[in-house]
Image 1 (cartoon, helix red, strand yellow):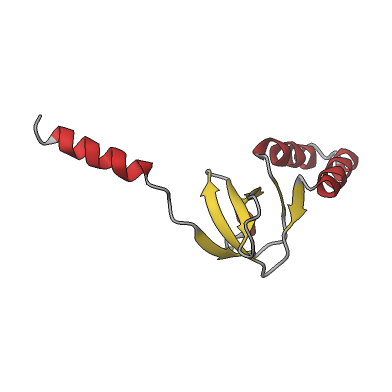
Image 2: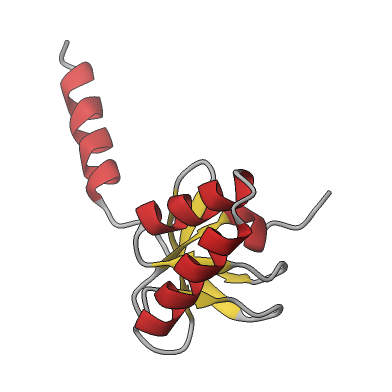
Length: 109
């Protein structure tokens, strides 16, 4: 028991520390949005074949600044990630991150 408590305390401290931000490069042009919900909604429209709904929502979200398009070769910071999305931010400036499919930064094998 004496060994377990210090080990658990060390693990808690390690988990509480902020993760290092990784620099990445866009390898596939994609869009990203400030909220993962909007990104999910856009991809669901694509999967459902609703090109009109997708186009309208993306156009409005881009115009409002909620979403942005990533260009091939653009340098970004990977701030956080889930299994399928990463929250990406431009390396220049302190812009908020945009939830984007990880395929935008993952090279095909």
